[in-house]
Length: 212
Image (tube, rainbow, N blue to C red; front, top):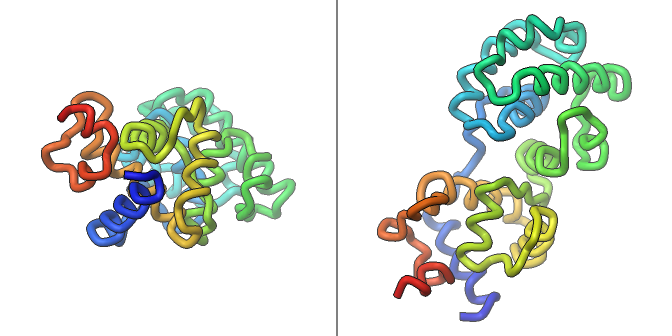
């Protein structure tokens, strides 16, 4: 199977079997999504969703979050991984939103990456989820799954994987393909002992072929 055929097969399968794939983070607006994504680094979406309602109730926008006391915010997010650093990032992020963007979340990758706690992956998530920009966020799931099934070849870092994926996935599907790969990695193509028996794309999977 050629690379082109592999991409076509996998995209076709996901399009038919996971047409409504979306983030599992709970949010009502771009500010809430930004907060949730920052908190989700090296933490499960389930845990983040347990914490964010209290944050949004107390700090509903950038203006209120910018005025938050570090110790108060820390107490709310203490069950999240790296709570001290993330509390600092959230307050810094909100402060810059107020000072530079009038409290509104910018919708370009370059502008988002100016914010504390926001790297390329987070910026790609925000822009692809909010208005379906063709940006591919590569987290640990996407990086692992895309390499394992053969969508990326010898990618040494997330940026290299990102460039390979966006070069081969139709532009109008990139925003949802991000969720296909994350959810597949989270529930089927898990890090240890991938669940090949219930996987629908084994026909196109390089890893599965090595098991034959």
